[in-house]
Length: 188
Image (tube, rainbow, N blue to C red; front, side, top):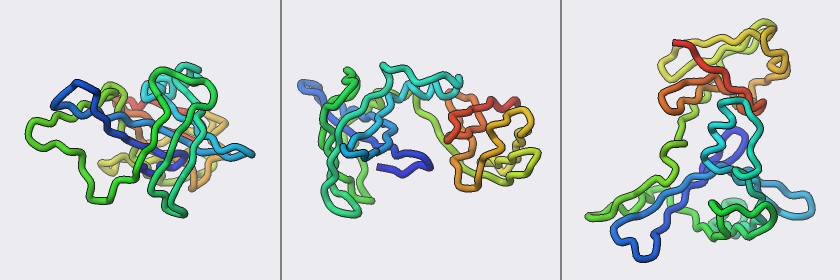
């Protein structure tokens, strides 16, 4: 489980029965909530398309399972159980925390298949400045990109603690204001 600015990303591996030589990999974004009941909000990887188009998440791309952590402050195990809005792409499961040096078993003859490779993206978080007129973000090459606050009034409430950076997906780049679910294409 990797901590992101506004949620977590978890990756799990499994082998399908009767399928020799392949190990499937899936990554999901998850946020945890507790209001009398412990539940998580798990998003299908294809929800990245909705984010980048500034659309609302589809109910088919989100589910809310119960969760239980074991192991104290640094959990060693997490279990997801059915709750509401069950979907076919996410089933109840128990995950064991991988050790820091763990790698998927890609020994001779084992192929790792990313089931959602088409939806994989990178997020580079490098907020450079917030001024009354613009917000500046640096990309991974050190180039600055500015967004005018007057063109996007919701940016007036941004803080240095917000998830602001550059998302790269399918060869396209966006300035990402993740906490606002606002993604602005970067023109070449």
